[in-house]
Length: 91
Image 1 (spheres, rainbow, N blue to C red):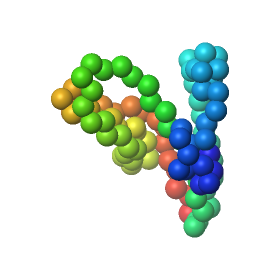
Image 2 (cartoon, rainbow, N blue to C red):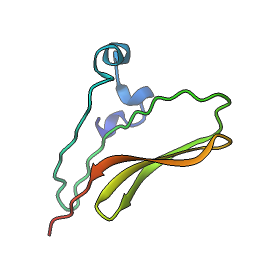
Image 3 (tube, rainbow, N blue to C red):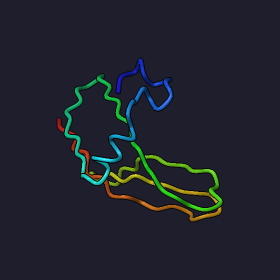
Image 4 (cartoon, rainbow, N blue to C red):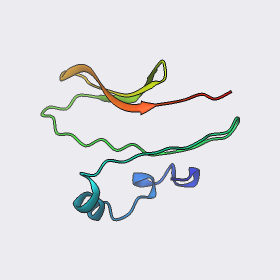
């Protein structure tokens, strides 16, 4: 993903059906060193089915070095934390 594609529908992604058909059941991994004053953009995709969906809120939560993806759906459940790995700050 690039900042130029941030405002595009689906962030400019194409051929998602092919990806879902072949890769959606495989684990993914990002290992990236971000230098001071540098940015790194990535897109998170979450697929789920819930009847009577309420407003969905998601975001990353950092507890110590452990990284979690938090999801909450109004009228469904308060929130759930999905473990995503860790962030290591180097000096």
